[in-house]
Structure formats: structure tokens, C-alpha cells
Length: 171
Ligand SMILES: [Zn+2]
Image 1 (cartoon, rainbow, N blue to C red):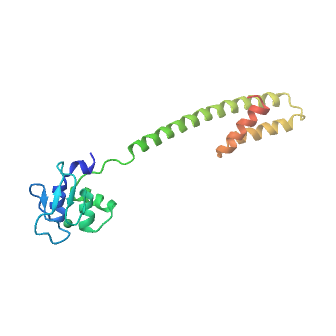
Image 2: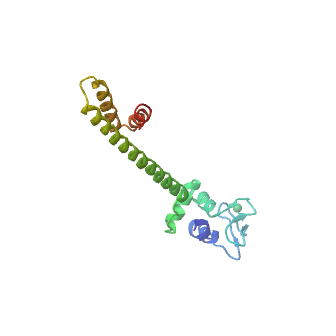
Image 3: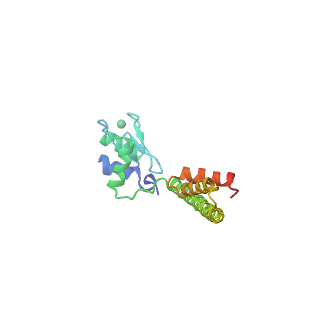
């Protein structure tokens, strides 16, 4: 529920501006108004003075009476009537949650891929080492470097390592 649906302008006029509304008429509190020049709309959501022309909603009553901004007026009404503000950005929060979940899923898939590549490389390294007579040392070294990169804390380096593994080692 929005605050403007919960409150009537008559109630706010009375409580905040000290203006009594009778038969949808009120004496304007913004100037001396011996005869009631103010009118409240049938749905009791708007007011208007036909002498000074000032009118508006519950928020305007607060803004005019307390000389505050719209935001301050809104906050004031929530506090004054002890109303809990509706959750702001509910839709946005849900979208953000969805995006986070998707990101996490992508990350999990990537980590799985990294692990499987690491296992492949480790197997390759073991196989090479088995027959190593010293001539494959540079390859063994390159493999080890790549495995280190795969386990790097920097996600960018891990992505690069996966690319390299796919390109050079056919993982
Ligand atoms: Zn007036």
C-alpha cells in the first residue's frame, strides 16, 4: 500500500496543518480566510483553495505547512502515522538476485572446467615425466606453469590458462 492510498487529505489537513474540513470545505490556512475557500475532492485525495489557487495532495499539505521538500514530506508522513514504507526496488532486487545466481552458476561451470583441464594436464605431465630423459624438460616446465596459472587467484589468469590449455594442449 502506498501512503497516498492509506491517508485522506482531510485527515492530513487536520493533523498536520490544523485545518478542519467540514462538508469537504475548509478555511485556507495559508492566508486569512474567513469564509472557507478551500475544497477537498470527492475521493478526499486532493485539496484546492479557490482564493489563492494553492492545492495538491497530502504531500503538498506537509510541504506547505512545514516548508520541506517532497522527499522530506513523504518521510514525515510515514513517521507521523507510523506506517512502514513499502519495500523499495523489490523488482530491481529480484533481478539483481537472479543475475547473481546466473553468475554463480557460470562460475561453478568454469571451475568444473578448470578442474577437468587440470586433471588432464596432470595426467599428461605424469606421462611425459615417465619417459623423460631430460629432453622434455621444457615441456614439463611449460605444463607446470600452465597448471599453476589454472590455480591462480586471479580469474583473468585462469581464463587465459584455460584458453591456452585448449589451444596448445587440446584439452
Ligand atoms: Zn488559500
